[in-house]
Each structure stands twice: as structure tokens, then as C-alpha cells.
Length: 563
Image (cartoon, rainbow, N blue to C red; front, side, top):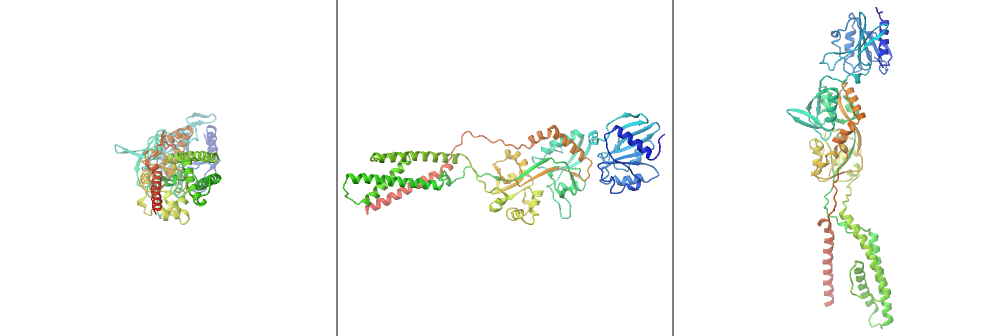
């Protein structure tokens, strides 16, 4: 009924093209080319057509090819001249992300099916695509062909092996009846993926983030994925080239910005500079010069008026000094808005006193307003604004989560700023570093002059649980993309990526991020800002010093007068 060789293959290909949206170049593979490295000649996704015969070694060759990572790149069409017998393919591993079609020649036509395995432990799953017979071609179309990620939505209760670590807010681990459940940002997204693809995950807790040893072996949570003891690492990790050599990343789940966080100083700290800070030194000098000039002007006016009306019975110099001193005291009293029982003299002198009074009132109002704003508004001067500034500041110590890629950047640096910061501002004992973000924030609140380097997206959701106030420096240390880890060449990674991108399109991912990783803080609003004793302490000390200085000067004057 059907021809042999290429004529049969062409009939099958023509039928596939009529019922699918696949576009591919066609390669009729002889057996001796199946193991070549250029299996699909660099094409996007070609169709490799193989006619299976019992008397050949094709099955053994396909078994070897199925163990390579390039097996799922092309579309495979296997043509059988007898009814489909899965035992014929039992030794071939066909992962769930591969598109392998089997065309079976039947007495009255042909049947096309797709076949795959959920895992090596599972039996083959066969989905009938369509059946046909010339010249009518399609008789029964069961499902669309070529849309693997869309059609294979059910992983049939597949159980994946996962490892994770407790690191809020991205990952939280809860224990219930001996079982571990994953929460946080990763946990909520993963739960939706499990429900959508109908699979589950057995979680194993590992200790530490893990790092690459000198022999290339990864420790911590990366190790099981490298040794293929785990299918997935339920923890968003930085995408690095060193990890990509032994594991595969999903598409980017999160983009974060790393900053240095420090603790705010206590609001009640005494600040002596607040007394003089409202005016800059040049303005204070101008006020003093104005008082002296005004006093000298008034004294000249008084002496000119006195010389017109009186005889000179005492030395002019002595009188000038005594009157000038009295006028300075009077001006100080007027500028400070105090009463004065001394007569102001003639009209021209009173006019000068009036101008001094107005000037003093304006200066005092400006000074009072500035002092009040400095005392009530909590202004914080950053000890440093960059990593270079932290290096130049000898008081601060830099901390972070130990064993992470961020930590590795510092202790593996051979020169430059990172090397200098590690040598002078960081611990060299790995055991003294924080194990997770919560531990790091506890150290930040409890230790003086401590800086913590971490992602802003992970710090802000935890600030409401802290017993201190923190602030980040303006400089962004780094921006990185984070994703999940799968074991190398995992057949499930493409399905996770596909569903994750759908979550982004539907807006579910944004809602989960706003719920688990909120980036806005609820700043408490204080209706009244009270001024305490510590804020007023410098002014009180200055007043006490002035009283003691006045008493000392008065005692000296009394002693001089007796003498």
C-alpha cells in the first residue's frame, strides 16, 4: 500500500505539515550520522526522520544520542512499519521537553503519536496526534502538534526533589507534621506553579548558601543540584558564570539593587554646634562689628553734645571709655529685647537706639526660627556615602551574609577597593558572618559602627520587625538578576519558565511581589515634635557658663575698686 524508503517518509512529512504549525528543514538521517556533533547542522529546530528496523543498530544508536544534551534540540520522527510497541523503545530516554513523533504504518492507513517520559522512573506516555490515509489525509485530529509547552500541562503528580534554606523574606520555611513548606516570595510563586503543572516537591533543608571549592565542587544548597541529587534549588540566587557551568538557571525571577545599610544614631544625642549653627561665622562677625560701630557712633554723638553744654573737668579719654562701655551694654540689652532704664539722650541718639532695636528683633527672630528647626527636625549627617567613603572611615565594620557570591567578591579580590575593604573593614573568620538576613539585621541593631551590605528588596520588608531605625547610603553597590537553579539539562526548566512568564503577563507576579516584598515603608507620623532636655542641654550649659563668667568678672571689679 505504501512505498518504501524516502517515498514513505515524504508522505508522513506532508501529512504533518498539513495539520501542524511546525516549520523545519527536513533531514533524512542514515544511521552512521546520528552520533555526529553537528546533529542538526545549526538549524533552529530541524526534523530528523529515522526509519526503525529491527535488523539494524538504530535503537542502540538512539539510546546513546538520547543521553546527550543535544537530543531535544531537533524534532524526531521515527517511522515504524508495524503497530507501536513501546518495549521496542524501552531503553531510550525521551524527556518530557523533547518532541519525538512516531509514525506507525497500519493496514488501512497511518497513525502519528508523540511519546515522552516524565522521568526515567516513569513509563512512556503516548498521546495520539492524528491518523490518516490517502487521499483524504486527516481523519482524526486529537491535539495540536508542535506546541509542547502548551499541550503538556499535566506532569501527573510528578514529585521533584528540592533543596532550600530559610532566608526571609524571599524564602521562609515552615514545619507542619514533619513536612516542610516553603513560603515567602519564592514559596508563593512555586505553589502556583505546582498547582498549574500538577506536580509536588519534596523539600530538603541544607546548611548555608554554599560556595565553590578549589576542586570545582559546590557546597551548600548548590551541591545537590550539581551532583543531580536534587532537581531544583528553591532559592533565588544570583546568576553567575561559575554557577552556569554546573547548573541551569531559570529566567530572571527578580532584579535587585545592593546597598550598604547603617543604623541611625540616637535622636537624643547632644550637639553643641546647634547653638551657633543658625548663623555662619561671617554673620556673627558682622553682628559684633555692627554693635561696636553703633556704640562708637552713639558715644561720639553724646560727647559732641556734652562738649557743647559743659566744661571739660575730666579727661576726655577716661570719659569716652566709661561711656562707651555703658553704651555697649545698653546696645546689647536693646538687641536682646530687654528693658533699659537709662535715658537714650537726644533725639538723634534715640533714633539710633530704635534702629538697633528693630535690627535686634529681626536677628533674634531669624535665630530663634533656625534654632527651633534644628532642634525639632531630626537631621542626620551620613558618616559616608559610598564604599570608598566606608574605606576611608576607620570606625565602621562591613558585614554581609557569609558564603554568598557577594561575600566571595570581596575575599577573592586580588587588588583594588574590594581588597582594601576586606583587609581593613571585614572579618576574615567565616563563622562570624551572618547566616541569613534576619541575623544580619540583629547585628546591625545591636552593634555600634556596623554596616550591612544586602539587597534593598530583601531589607525593606523586614524593617517593621526591627527594634532600630536604619538608613541606606545613596550609592548602589551592584544590580543583579536572580533566578532559580535546576540541575543541568533538566527537562522541567522550560515548563517552569513558560508558566512563570505567563504569571508575569497575567499580573499575578506583581501582586505576589507587592505582598511578600513590599518596597514602601509606613513612616509613623508625629503630630508634635517635643524638645527634650538633651536638645536644650547645650543652651543651658552655655547659660550657666555665662552666669559663672559674670560672677567672676563682678568679683574682679570689686577687688579692683577696693584696691
